[in-house]
Length: 196
Image (cartoon, rainbow, N blue to C red; front, side, top):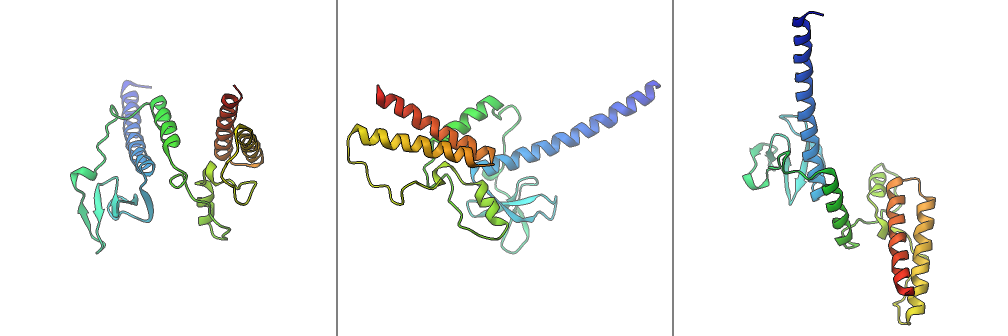
């Protein structure tokens, strides 16, 4: 292969890598928006074709930074709603995992998701994947408040460990199994502290 062919091939690879990098950045921005609580609508941007997101009542395209108004027209987004994170400012994989773990611990059951009822449409599948550990059915219909001493707390923790262990064993979804095992581990650690 001549030097000219090698250089032309390198240039093609550079261009391909640049296109791929832009796609990865766009995907990362969309992923960050979803983590922040934005919802992806069923509409797409007229300019770039990417999905329109809704956040705090405002619909916009994260890629071309245009806001979708009520009249269907596009307008430039204000500076404060634009995604300004650069590659240097983004957390690394380990930092992102630590942040995600701390966010999950701080979430209340109301924030962690809702249990979807039985529905025959495809949207029920989306709800099922967003369920969290707090949505597993309880062994008792109504759990009465714990009024007893340590023995009742001990029994409650044992039931919790068993419930989430069974839930992890019976699910086919690895994410739900991981969440259930995490809840079971947390209850087991609390049980260990209680026994000391």
